[in-house]
Image (cartoon, rainbow, N blue to C red; front, side, top):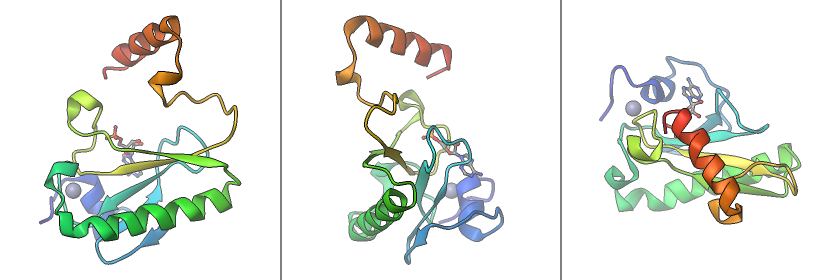
Length: 137
Ligand code: AMP
Ligand code: ZN
């Protein structure tokens, strides 16, 4: 399955050049074009699946392989201490590119990036939701 106009299908077909970080038979990883931190990268399946729900369970091991290998490469390259793996599924959850993908976000202690709503105080959480709604999420 492949989608002619899909930006990630174009990347998978080599029509949009990217600096590949890692690939196996069914998945590949490359830097996000709008990184939220240095090293922010994406893992995508080479075939077009809209959301995580469309991915076959049989691809699970290869997905995990690509997520883990990419994360290890990023941790080493960017001297990061940790990383977040995030997947937005469906528009209401902030999915802008409707070809399932996984963000890998290298993290350092006190890097100031908020990725866990549980870490926020009530006032900060309200501010966060306000910012996200202004951004159209
Ligand atoms: P999401 O909101 O989870 O759908 O995020 C889509 C992500 O894809 C965003 O972080 C974009 O910066 C990223 N993106 C879109 N087009 C490209 C591209 N051509 N190369 C790399 N990253 C891209
Ligand atoms: Zn696609």
